[in-house]
Amino acid sequence: MAKFYGMIGFATQEETSPGIWEDSIIERPYKGDVLANGRRWNEVNDQTNDNFTISNTFSVISDAFLYRHIPAMRYITYMGAKFKITSVDVERPRVKISVGGVYVASEPSTGLA
Image 1 (cartoon, rainbow, N blue to C red):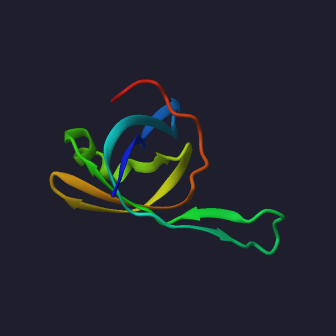
Image 2: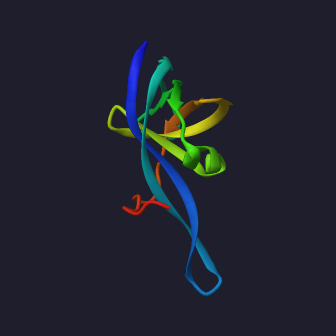
């Protein structure tokens, strides 16, 4: 079983101007295991390049922050790329995270909440 160490991105809502709320990403490091490891290219008819998708499952060692912010989880960094989190299963003291396609969004902030 392969080991994992990487960042998990969490979205928090911030008011950028009166009445305007936007997601702000906070990254935190986690470690654990890679339970399943699969990759595929999805052919898209109207695009020149195919989409790259992984279907991996990670089991990360959790902490209080992760348990409190499970609904805010957006991506996990693996092999130098950010992948969208598609499902989460809580199995204390670990959390199983399944991922899918590449995550595309704003840059993370440096602060920790």
